[in-house]
Length: 283
Image (cartoon, rainbow, N blue to C red; front, side, top):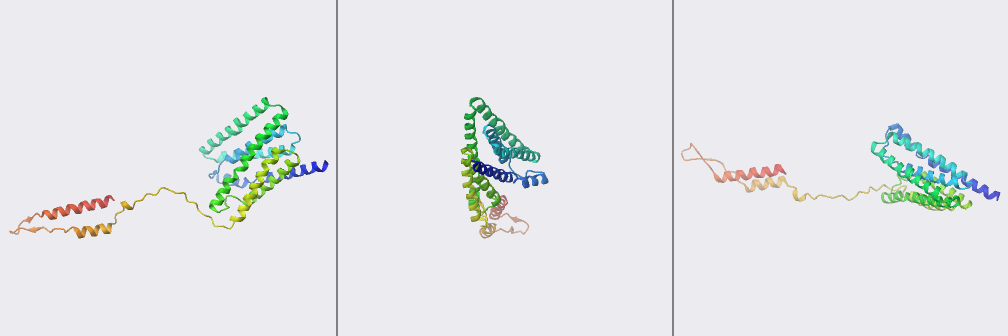
């Protein structure tokens, strides 16, 4: 029994340490944001979701017996994500700030508040733990599915630019630790989501090994092309055609030598030249 508790504590402690490293991973990004005083096009969605997840697991751990290690890591994550969101809001554009506030209201105020009210007044203690466990597990499974979009991008572009190996490795290692913690503690709500996290982590590392030396493929989205071949005029051919088909008339003197005979043919040909030149200028 003592050995079993030692293993549980050991995996939980390692899970805390590795998860802290993962949680600190965005620090270089926010250092650049603070240095350049701009959010640089980064999105706040991952940090809002991470904050919501930490709040859910904290609420679950408060009602779960002997869940100190869950409380410690999620408390650390909670304060780190608040710090990230605060720094993001300092340098984000007005549009991004509005979107971030909307997300915070949706997930962290109304969403979390609704869960708290419903589970607090509609369930008893043991039942409440079960309901909160299912909510946390479902949300965690959805979060673990999110890397599939990165996997798809890596396969399409044959580039691992957006999937660093170190992050994939530590996420996989974290999933291993928390899986064994939940398995030994007989907490299915902790163990099950980390099975999926482990599988996706392995997939990401395999893809990294496959595409790490590949040349990046630029994926060009199909665009509407306007065929203007029918509207292109070859000016050189047009000029040759005009010169070959139009003979410019020269004015002739009358018999007395003191007048000019109006040449109707030359007049018409001159009009044709002017019209042709006008069409060319419009094109």
